[in-house]
Amino acid sequence: MDMDIALGLARHTPRADRIPLHVKATAIHIDGIMAGTQFAWLRTTTSVWIAVVKVAATSGNHQNTITLDLCVTEDAISLPVDHR
Image (cartoon, rainbow, N blue to C red; front, side, top):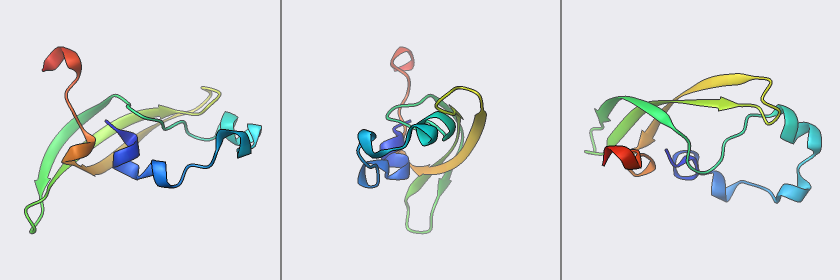
């Protein structure tokens, strides 16, 4: 899944040298393309398709993990290269 598209991160990410080290270590690491599992498609009343997905993420220091349940537009997901 393209997390930049899914969450709009490119618009809100500060320069790396302006992020305190404790934030880099303890905050969740979300970046670029991340593997996920799609569970469903939803169609909105405006005919837009939404994917229901789960993505595993870890903290910068790999001490913590979380599974993100997300609803994203179809342009944020793609099949792995070996499934195309």
